[in-house]
Image (cartoon, rainbow over all chains, first blue to last red; front, side, top):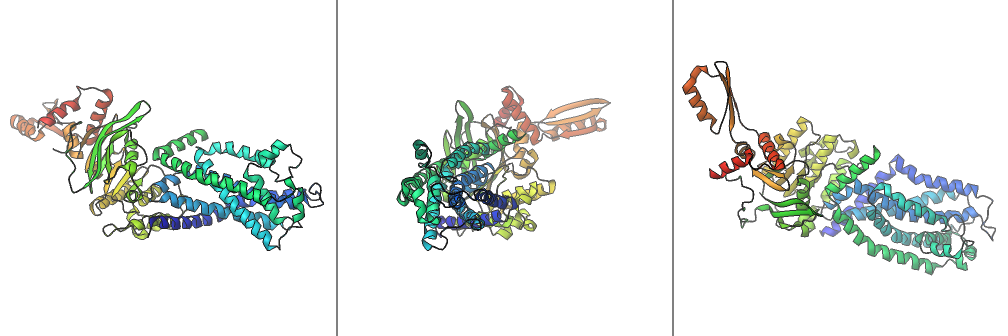
Length: 283
Length: 324
């Protein structure tokens, strides 16, 4: 059989094994449940508040926005984190020492990350539904929109996450990416509409995928009437497609180059040196 | 003693049968302005076990990483399995195995699962002569991990973990295997089992093995040929026996006669003793003959290289050797 086909299949199996490993690990499970807990608490405290200019519940608006944010986070940070950690522990070098191992590794990682991102979305969505009303849960169109936004969101963010993970040398430097991400979330309209923000801040937010993932999710689950209070007074599906698509293209062009460069530089002594540095920092 | 080559002598041209698995000529590596390797030459034939010895910082890891294709060289002619490592493709990669120092990966995977997974990448490279991958139950038996097959990797002890590393290194039935300090953390029993495995790979499967170690005893047991790397070049090369005899040279003979102590150094200890007994007969007491060990040879060579003393013992022996 063709070695590439074999490696892709092995990669899928790899993803499945890692999925089983992560969903049977207590610490990881807590990691998946924790955002749900935060979301439920947030929605609870938003009870009684409404989206400005409407009598629609603010909590019900936050739920889809948070799903979009979770997707962006899963794609950008979680993958970057895995790449950094697995470069440090030698997993990547192991893949490099195996014929077509890097391809298998990447297929496995994409399988793992996209499935956990979608699973996390469900884990957040289901309990929160008991707290909010007014979502379009019975409409097939709503689920279809949710699906394409989610898939496009993953295609837009996962390659970028791979680029970030390849450029960061040690786990400690992940904070350098986390902080700006947090800031970005604050003005991306996840927890509150950004209509009242200064124009330049709105413009910055609309450059990045987080805003559009939040908007896309809202367009799927919220009643159409709520489009009126979004920027531009519409769900702007074309623009969503455009911005997320542009990030996807950028990521897919950059990722292979950056990943290849990172993989080429990987060697036993680099892994050893990195570990020694990490040990020095611990003690 | 033809296998011992003087530094700088030109090796014979490769045989036409392509039996040469490793062929390295004048390998050089420079980081910035620092030269780490100044012209390393080495060759290995099919089924040969080579041990690369040398002090820390001598360039062992750099050399191995270049041969593995994990690092680009500055200059030199290289053929690893007939291919320049800088241009090695996945087919080439499938023919070699790599066991590096200290892996910590795949902690959550089960032993059997990991070997099956990594082995599956080799299946397309199976040939009539070499069936790939190595069936996992057999492989687990060979490295002594059969009873731990269902364990998670993170639950293995240090020695077991190392054996798993070796198993991963050979799951693709490599024609060439790199072992970087393979037995660190092994207890004596595990070490012996490992040595048997290495012999088996070299003898039965014709695997060429290049290993680095700090354990001279291990090098002596495993290697057909030992290469001593110091200061970025191979300063000596030969079978363990040749090296120790050649470099440390003479045997040391101690005895007492009439209560006086005597020490003598002789190239031919037997002839010297025959003469000693002929002259003094029963007066010779507390006789002790000490052959130079590989460790003596190693220490002499490395000391000389590091101190740069050209008039040292080893150089003298080199000259003697080349006159023989």
